[in-house]
Length: 268
Image (cartoon, rainbow, N blue to C red):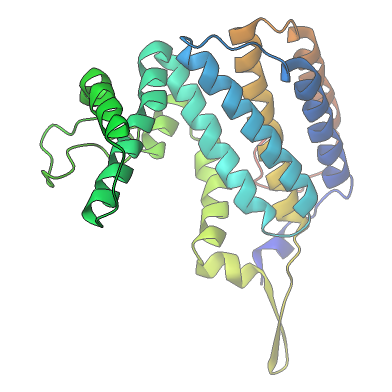
């Protein structure tokens, strides 16, 4: 039996969650569109960009539901939320690592062009070399296996998303992220849930209200929590608006009948 048949969905869930995501999008749009950024504020810079990207992803989830692929977008929203919250634990140091990793990316681009015999303007090489002297040690591997490239592959260094989940809470990681990842990586479970047998024939159902509900719930949490970080960072003055959205969510979702559905209610 396909796993989605084990649970009874409340038909009000997807429309309600869609409406909630739209409300958070509207609040984020009118609150954070013209946030002034200070060039020296690495965490503020990171927060603003992560918020804008989460807003774009939330719009994509709304566009894709009830297609299963909405889970692919929700998955990357979870990744973004974990990275932002993890960075906020040591905001100054980690945000500097995030932002300065562009120097490593530029260095790799320059090295690749030089290997291919493509000329690189000398001023660009010198600017990159000067920047590496300033921030290169933040990204240097202690014992690099490849001496030609002594830097970590990404700004997080040796820290994995699962490590972030350990310190921040694993609810999103162990439940929706795991399922979305199975669909992302062509797992048997995800593909199996999408097929139906009719005699000797198999049909594929691209839609899933269950995946749509999980994706919307993840999108709602990721966008709200990112907006909370932005509210604190930029003093947006929307704490009351955010609390009202949480209250509306809790008051309505608790009235829905889940019949044992293992979908988490992570919103406080």
